[in-house]
Image (cartoon, rainbow, N blue to C red):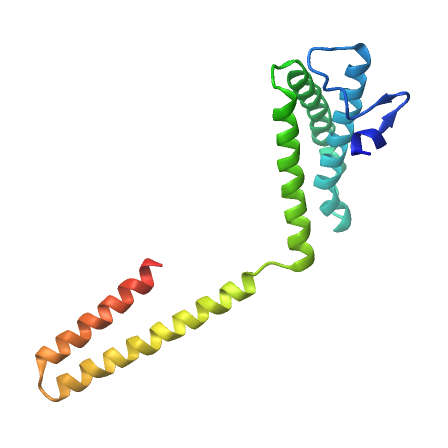
Length: 170
């Protein structure tokens, strides 16, 4: 049983109005209620931080109402275009599968966690290694200068320059 089989509006399904080329008046109401639901969630998400912080200002109510209406109109237009276009069922099915796959990846990442801490740790290790190499080359250059050996100092400084160039190019 799919999600579209679970969401009903009266005797008509809410999510399944996208039968290509078969426009019915009940489809409009399905599109309208789906667009209204999506638009309402958008407005709620946008107002939620202000409500939590108790900084909601009623003078912006007109902006939220206009966002709600614009979302409904845009949702109905999008549903009409998708239902009346020549997009084949396979294309819509593939698009739906890609969307569901992305949602699954986001949920899995939220549960399992991302590897950003590991990447940061590896980057820190690499930077520390480059710093040690750079200090060693700088120390070699200083030692060569103290021994009045400019050729070795230039070699050490060139090696330091290549280390710094590699580090800055990453």
